Length: 248
Image (cartoon, rainbow, N blue to C red):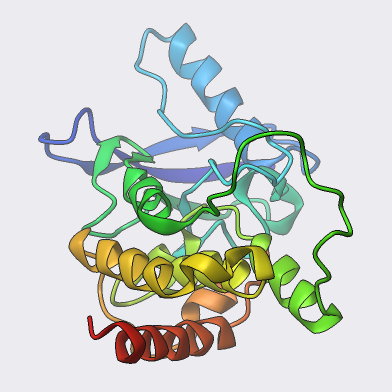
């Protein structure tokens, strides 16, 4: 396959960026998208040019590091991560635009790399369960209803890639935050901090500068792990309940 790549190049957070065109020849349909970028970077290095910077880690669709917008869609045309997207989903002669996540709360570090530490701060504000230290409790010591376990597992699949933010026209982080809140608030282990968790995490989300949710649903459509849109409604209910009970 021969491809025309238009890739966002930006040498630093305060530098001007622009789309740069590269011609790729002999691309195998069995390559992953990141393997194709690896090949491009090898060619650039051989020519003495600066390789394209992009995030990656596990390359197994688990870690969520490989965040990029491909032809206007987070992670590309398939509902998967960019590392699991294969070049057979494109046609010979295609022009492919590759950009970083576009959100005020995700500033560009370099090329396709953005700073997603805002997600870490949201989790740090309440996305955990405090428990006494010591030996691990027996697995079945605390019964969990099947419905609650299913809800918790469904939301625990969130990998924090940021596709929901990139897809949202408002740059909202509601789907990510709701996944973390609903995951823990569904379980009895999360009950002691149920109110403070949702209030603190939503407060931190707003402080990070993410946009508001207008229920367009693009976040759930782009999510590679299928976090459901009703999780946002569930978090809103949790927030109203917590605000009423605590007076915050």
